[in-house]
Length: 187
Image (cartoon, rainbow, N blue to C red; front, side, top):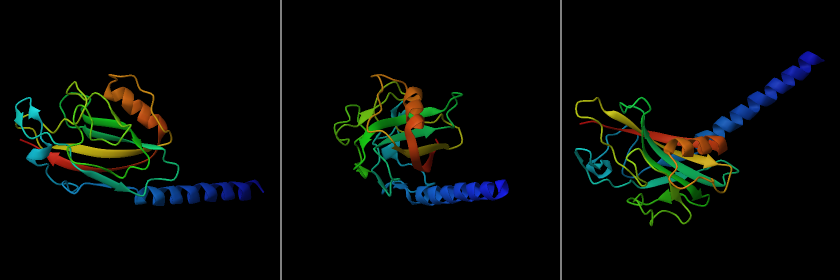
């Protein structure tokens, strides 16, 4: 009897994992201007720190969010930055659940073109808004991971000026799904 109960429990867990994996596979993030595993253009390169790009956040679109999504958060992260902890290029959160895209150029410091209610955290450039790629000269191309997080809460309660690490903690505590793509840039 115990073996039969354990088998049913194991099958139930396996079935749930299969359904969750299938649902997560449907959640998609893309950009009309950045193809996965491509090289970022001058539009997404920082203008400062020795870089001379346009520093324009890309258009991002998504579909098939997990059931129960109450809001989204967006992060852009470079794990290859020679800091010991990577580099946060963009942190946006409290994106309304009915949102399916963010327009190109919306990641300005004032965030006025982001969906209503969206807030931005401080990046490792020391300000809010999108901060484009700017790896050190001579480094191998760095990875820029664009990740959309589906959250189980309408709003993350985060103090103004919070670090990307604190925002990340709150995202991870409320995440029910995520989707991402990676692009590269070197100089």
